[in-house]
Image (cartoon, rainbow, N blue to C red; front, side, top):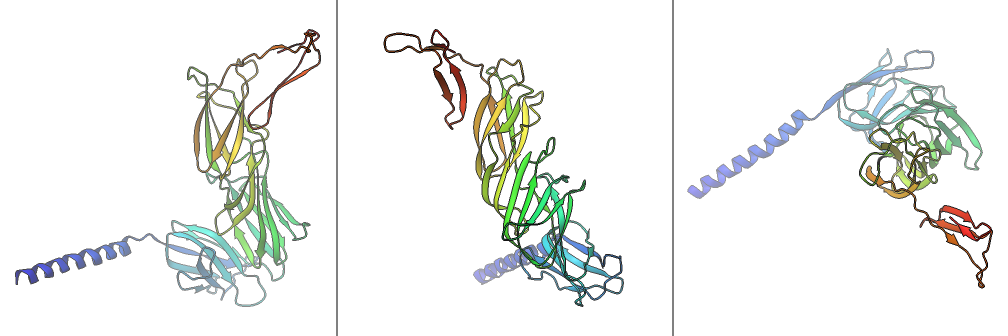
Length: 354
């Protein structure tokens, strides 16, 4: 009897915990409202359009689709927090469907759509830095498969771009240059091959760069300010996840023209794409007793690295012939381990070099 009672109590406790936990998860799940309007280019309401909320990169509805009313409005009362593709499909054939890719729902959200007339499609969105800052002046290209440029747009002050193109498969290229003072790579390129454009598409790109913080000091541990940082080249990586189901076929990033320099604490921040290594050069300010230094940095995630600058050493001597005669005009090189030339000297009339 006692054993049966014990099993009964244990079962009650287990069921109470299980269902109580499940109930708590249901009650405290983050749910938000998604709403908006669907209009044409003249701000006329479009009724009867079907609005879908899909898992990113799929056409699986995560909640039953809704239809716009006579005012062109739609409402999803409950959408769980997360990232989704939102599609609007008009009821007739006079307008293109539109897909908003990788939309983050983390609060009550209003997302309005403007449908364009059937035929030419619109590819639009924003380009943001890794911290979410809008990036003006970025270039967005579409190329035909034969390499001919199909379209080009520049982002405005809000980072927004818009391109008109026919339905088809394209090579998509995002490119940035001269991003001085911004939380973004100074120069970069992101290429997506075989990008299929079959409906109006809204794609916001947040550059998938990692933060590389370099702390520059002298041999005594004192910070060195005013040191320019740059990369020897635009380094390349592949299969870079750009979000929203978009994978870059190739991507390059770097600082060919150097950064703004280390601050009073000796620190400077670079933004670089991951999954590759970079040769970062550190150029001391004019009149500094230190020499230019190059360090190799592997970037897989955010990097925090300290570099100690060294005062230059003197390598000198003479070059003589087999009989001891000085040989002028001889070349003496020093190379870094990565093959980059570090220094070059010619011997003088006495065969001396330094």
